[in-house]
Length: 90
Image (tube, rainbow, N blue to C red):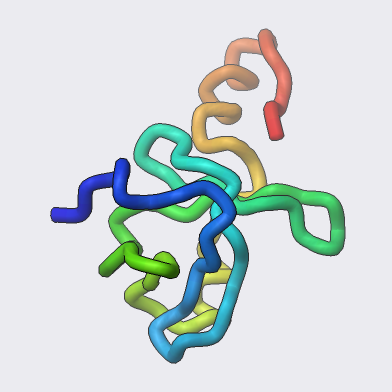
């Protein structure tokens, strides 16, 4: 099992084919928070997708699959908003 402390901030995130899909902002619970994209949005991917962390973070899926499934809101924001309190934290 991957030790999340092996993942360094500002490390490239590579898909299963070696294509960069993002850059680590930081580990956020059981997710990787990626730095903002060109649209000024963060994205979160589950640590369960990570197969290795060395000079880059390696994912178990290709770019298109990762981009279709990553989260565009902090994972706990749905819980915070369901009761009408809190806001979306990005």
